Amino acid sequence: MRIAGSLWSVPVDARAHRLATAVAAGLPVVHWDASDGRFAAPGGFSPSTAGRLLASAPPVESEAHLMSHAPAPEVPAWAELCTTIVVPLEVDGAPAAVAAIEARGARPALAVSLGTPLEQVPSGLPVLLMAITPGEAGAPFDPAVLDRVRRLRDRGRNPLVGVDGGVGPGQFAALAEAGTQWLVSGTSLFQAPDPGAWLEACRQSVPEG
Image (cartoon, rainbow, N blue to C red):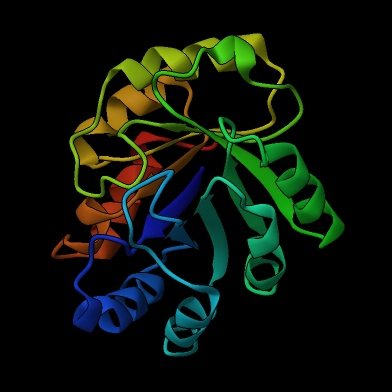
């Protein structure tokens, strides 16, 4: 199970402390959201801001989610920090971005919004299925995503299928049953009184699969 934490919804003055606390408690991956303000609501991080926060925390793997209509120009700077870079399937610039990510030695992945037919998802790439509208940090989890996970897992043509948005302990069992392999959590994880207990509960409920 790949577990990633998104700081988007964390107050700016609390981000460094909560990141360091979560990483020390065992968070394996930090998920950096970046929005162009058109594809999704304005907000998120720049590579320089992410780099400063990473410098204040124990070593940790990073991934980026570029919610942009033209993500390819953003790839080089993010590839300096991240092993995986996620771009929206729905934008015209997605193929160019995937090629740029591969050229920089990072792993490309596709984010897929709830309203996008799964028939449009190509084979061979990791897929991050959105359980909220992109950019709406703190929005409630939409259970419609669970059937979408099952359908992609049954199809068997994508090496990693994950869920992003509204994920907390109340969804762990359902995510496990659906076959989720990767999840992104922000508000629930970073507001947890004990991030280590949150992470352990997730690992116990949604094992590697």
